[in-house]
Length: 218
Image 1 (tube, rainbow, N blue to C red):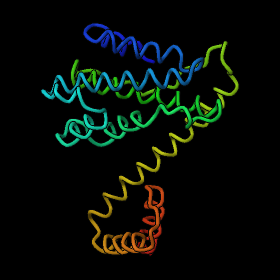
Image 2 (image 1 turned 90 degrees about the vertical axis):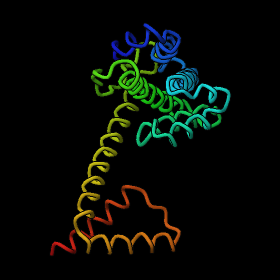
Image 3 (image 1 turned 90 degrees about the horizontal axis):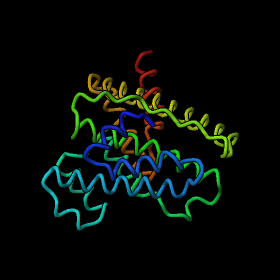
Image 4 (image 1 turned 60 degrees about the vertical axis):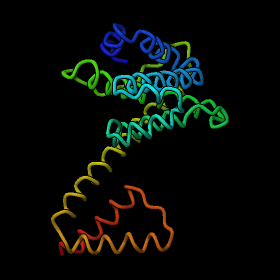
């Protein structure tokens, strides 16, 4: 994890920095403990956000309650809100029924915690803070290096695919905003999908949009 993240937190939020350092140190060697450290880091950071925003009373409620309030007030929104919620849902040991799944969850927690820390620093400590794109950590020699390396390669590919889908999704939204005919066709597709109880994700929407765009451009 980038050292400047630790240095920013260490001054006024040393206990948060300690959670983050421990997570960084044990992400490969003790994956489940790393997941718990990440949850503790995120929950305590959320409490600090509540204090700074004037909602200290929320610190007596659940993490889900805090996140709902911060989202409704526009403090947490979009991608970072979803990241906080992903962390909140992690931590039940029964979810990770093999070593690889547990390690994958630990690495995801490492990435989520880094992104949350950077968001906090930029919004509450230094508005000029430049966020460095996340990089997966290097597995130490005392861990299962081969499994970890292969897993990280797989996760990087999945991240790249997700980024490509997100870019295509944004282009789709821009196109629909300026093309009423495409909007009508797309809305009909959404209505039919809802009637048929079909699950729709971004990938599915982008694929259907490509078909519509191709038909209209002929």
